[in-house]
Length: 336
Ligand code: NAD
Ligand code: DAU
Image 1 (cartoon, rainbow, N blue to C red):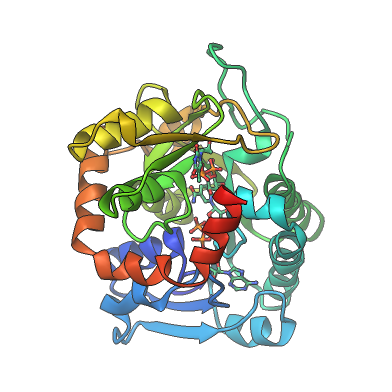
Image 2 (cartoon, rainbow, N blue to C red):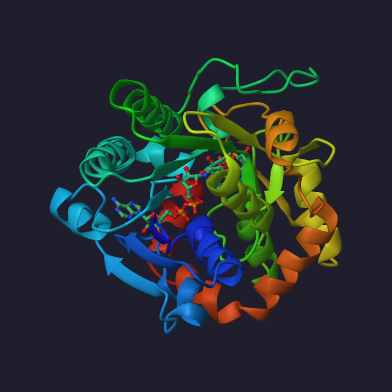
């Protein structure tokens, strides 16, 4: 089987390519990635010479490149996106372009190329914000309620994918997953930012009162869920993917990371809150468990320890990122 993975040089896409090639040595992958600030070929260094892997540098909004990349492909796994909420607040334009126009371009090309499965990677953020201290969780029947430009652009892409299934019969599936963490996580997101700031002797910025709750899933568990959906998922269906850990707010999470790294809470710096900051996310993933037999294999504590070790052992990887364009973003986001 031949897969086209979009956004495979980013955090989750790269983890997925490693996971998939390890578990399906008979299949081949084409990775189409524009290499934005978040795309990094170093994430794929270990498999770059694998005969079952091909890289194409290109934009998912470019129909000509997309058509040629999709030629003879069986399955599309669509990760490519602008993915960082804070950047979408600074400038929403690239989010609309890549997440909406790019997804539409892929869907059109998938129809033309008779793609057997188009799997769209989405997020829990499209369902809005839950109350703190409630026990409510998002499930596959929850209505869409995106509240940031990023979430709105991802919601639009989900709707387009569904519309192409219902209207044109394109064989699609969608997964909406909670916050991932693990190797190759770009250090502008909370967990890798906290770990690398601590390693650099810098403070860890916590937005607002730090009571916002996220559902943290180790990235390998997400990759396994996607693989299962590709093998056993029902066409036209959506699957929610989330963790089995007790809820934890950002402040508790940062305290945990500081403790694991032998530092005190004095390293926390409370900074201005994110505008429209969603208070709480929680995922009911019983459908994928019942129908496909998926559940997370990793828990937060041990996976965090592994992730901290990974960042300690791959200083070169994140140092290069933190010294480049990202440095300008950091100054603007936290100190302007
Ligand atoms: P990322 O920002 O780390 O990577 C995105 C990748 O897409 C990069 O390699 C980038 O170069 C590429 N890309 C961006 N615009 C492109 C374009 N126009 N054409 C081709 N390639 C382009 O993102 P991530 O965290 O790996 O997220 C991957 C997907 O998973 C996204 O769709 C995101 O919405 C979704 N998601 C992420 C999380 C999370 O916690 N990170 C959770 C749930 C869902
Ligand atoms: O929920 C899934 C989503 O998770 C994905 O769709 C997004 O692509 C991904 O980026 C992530 O979004 P978040 O906004 O939840 O992740 P982030 O790591 O940016 O922030 C996590 C929480 O930590 C959030 O409540 C904001 C807070 N935060 C973040 C940063 C960067 C801080 O308190 N301080 C910070 O410096």
